[in-house]
Every structure is written in structure tokens, then in C-alpha cells.
Length: 428
Image 1 (cartoon, rainbow, N blue to C red):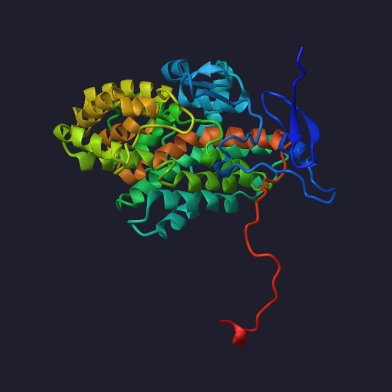
Image 2 (image 1 turned 90 degrees about the horizontal axis):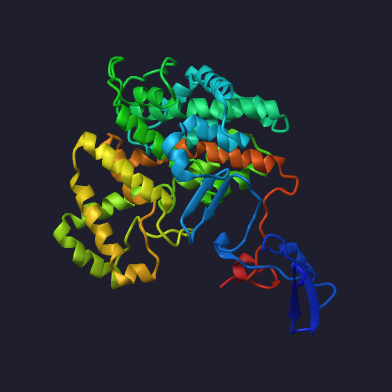
């Protein structure tokens, strides 16, 4: 029987090295023994953007991009999105198991108790211009939370970490609603703890004079979208949370790093790009010409393709059903008609099939948010609320992983060799 090792021949020296294989991986540090001279640093791997490097072990989320699978703690995303509440999913990601009724009641009550925010945070928020980008405001105000809760720095205490998770889960929707209303000059609507988690958030967003008529279909659609965004393995923002958190900083600061990463158009802002694309297309009869221009290398088909998924993104399938439910309530959107036809044509075109370009989670989510009354620049804030449980679960897992140290990637130096300093008067 073959050994679980990899034999490497260094053709520079003729030496052979045997490296252990675990979970189809080798440890990068095992390559350090490969040297030409004894005083060499040793072999490194070069992997821009971490295309094929595992930086951690995680038991939270499983993805099989070729088969289009996504599971939270082993549960298929299709079952979780259909049957669970967002707070159940958050508990699952944190604790590893779905809560029983008593556990869920305590978890829900703990969050409900912490939904209010310090009034000084409102003054902080009012320092922003009315037209400040919502994600910029969210980034600043979540980072600012660390100054209100200095006890959060005690990350070695499990009970303390639990309290900070509760605070973030409770306060992020409140802050997100406040910054929405700030940008519109509306008075802040404070939390109503007689409402559930989603209902309270929606009420803080849209209540006028204390009155808001909830639409249960739209609220459940929003909850499903948050569940679908709850975690997605080691994506850019989650990696940012882990990297910053590895320095030992408090979770508010680590999460603000995740928000900063999510702010980028290549990550959280992708669904905005889909809407802009649909606006540029304008009508269904212009889709063939748009498809031809993409195939000719002019522009991109936004909302298609994914770094991980090489088949249909399982979240996109679920979101398409959510879109049907939402538009049954709000009426059809012209952009939706364009999107459906665009998807139909692209999925039957050999160019996109060969490149395994299938709709991803961003293709329909922006249309849904827009139909529910959320402005385009606010979409990523909703994404952040949904992704918060994943960020916190990954942060907690990183804290408890004895193999983890402060993140510090290596580099390949490509600059000058040593050279003498040139006095200013002699420089060319």
C-alpha cells in the first residue's frame, strides 16, 4: 500500500525529499528543508490571491464547487434556507449544532436585550455627511464600538467572547437601520423588542411615525437572503477577519476589517454591478448584441461565474425562487425580465458553458433588494448583516485553533540589491 507522502526530487542538487500528505495537502513549512546550500532560507510556495493554499482548518462551512454543494456544519443549504430562521443558523455556525427550543429562547432573549446602542453612537453617526456611502459609515461605526466596550479585548475568556458576539448580533441591525435613516434625514426608529429579529430590523428601517405594515412574504425573503449569505468559507472578508483577528484584537475591530473587505466592488458590491449591467442593456432585444460584445472581450457578464463554483451556485437556485415570491408581491420589474432572458441565452451558449459561467448569488439578489425598497448603495450593508454570524464563527474558531499564529505571509523580494545612499545634490 502506498504511503501518504509526496516524494520531491530537487533537480538542482539531486536530493530526494519525502513530505507527509494529510487531507490531500502538504505543509508549506515542510518545503523549507529543500535547500541548495545549508545557509539558504529554504523553499517557499508562491500563490498570489491564495488560489491553491489552505490557511486554516475549519469545521464550519463545506463547499464543493464542482458539484455545486454548500453546507453549514454538514446541513445542506437547501434545507437550512427552507426551514431555519436566521438566528437558528447563527447559533448553528457558532455552536456547531442546531439549538433546541430552550437554547434558542435564551439565544434570542440575549440578543433582544442588547439591541439598543449608546446614544453617543448616534452623535458619532451624525458626523457623517448625508450622502456618505452606507458601507463607509458602517465600517467606521462598528470599529468605533470597540471604544465603547473595552472589555472586548479580553478575548481569552469564552464567556466574554460570547457577550461580544451577542452585542454585535444585536446592534449591527440597529446601526444599519440608523445609518439608512441618517442618509435620508429621517428620525431614528428605536428597537422594538416585541418583534422578532427580522421584523425589528425592517421596522427600524421603514417605520414612519411608529407605523409599519409588515409583509410576511418579503420579511421571510429577506431572512432567506441573510441565511444564504451567513458564511461562505475563506472568502476575502472572512480571511480579513481571521487575519486581523490573529493579532489578538477585539472582535469589533476584526469585524470592521471584514466590512472593509466586503465594501469592495469585487466582493460585496457585485450585485450593484449586475443592476448597472441590466440598466446598460436596457431591453430584451438588446441582449444578443450585449452577449456578442462580452464574447468579443468588451465588458463582462456580471453575476455569472465564481472563484469556487464551477457549476450552478446553489444559492442562486434558491434566490431565484425567492425572486418569484417577492415579485409576486411587488409586481414584475423590467430588469427581472431582462435578467431572466439573459440567463436563458447565456446558459444555452457554448461560450459560457465551456467556461463554466453560471449565475451566482449576486445575479438576482440585487433585484430582490431593490424590489423590497432598499437603495442600491445599501445592498452591501444587508450583506454584512447576513455575513456577521460567519465572521464571528470563523473568528471564534481561529481563536481556539492552537496552530494559528498572527498572520504574516512571506514575499518574494524583487527590488534592488544593496546599493549606497546618494546625497541629494548628486542625484540625477
